[in-house]
Length: 179
Image (tube, rainbow, N blue to C red; front, side):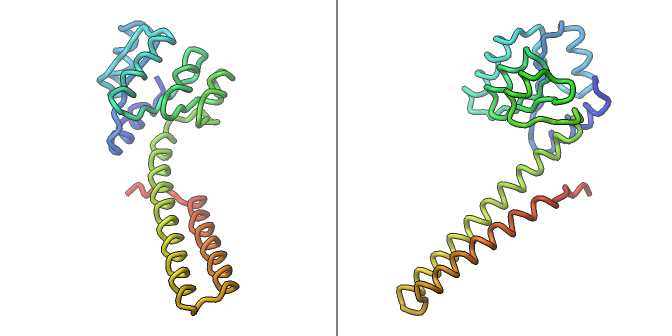
């Protein structure tokens, strides 16, 4: 068990994420690992097709599932999950190819940061859409009244595009507030 597993499970729990251990290991080993990590839901002795069936169960209930894995046996589940995260350093090439996200350094402590960053990204996208549509709507109204000429309208549109790109680029320097 990775030393940071318990902190990672607690951190993603603050986002309302429930952790489930789905493993090919026997129940005794799985129970011990789950207990140390703070995971209550355990599915042990799973073959790749069992992992796929479990993912289907979650998806049929309308739940979004993020699968974290590193082995060949995890590849189909990584592909089927809403989001698949592979451990790139120790993971198999097949798992890396199947995943949506690859942790190059295999450091699971970054998974809570991924959840926080995805939330920030979605807020940025919504803000950009509102800014862009609001600016275009105002430009259309001004063009209808004759205040905005076609050339000025093109400049306003381009200025809006630059504003959206500039706002999005702020994500590159974003750090999660851990206070």
